[in-house]
Length: 95
Image 1: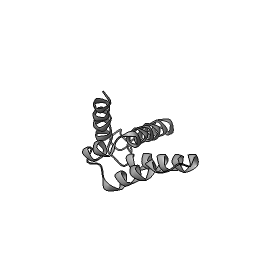
Image 2: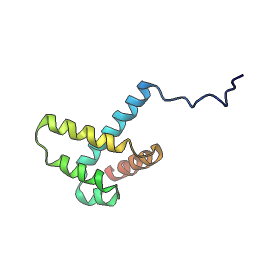
Image 3: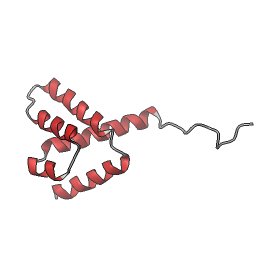
Image 4: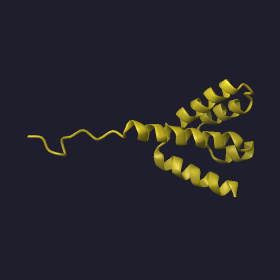
């Protein structure tokens, strides 16, 4: 007999995963617009910081879209709580 405790944890729906991916990518676009001093103040992982810096120098529209997707993919590796804290910090920096 199976109980609710035996059931595997439910995965988020495909739509929820896509919304999270788009949110991470939009947050990455915000990072691209930050000055270097603000980017350094965030104390992000080095790989993400380098990806943001590389994205700033890209002029090709298609290449920039790929770089934004890459930044979003790196950001999806963060835990959701850290992303929310980063969003809140960026909101206060914009004001």
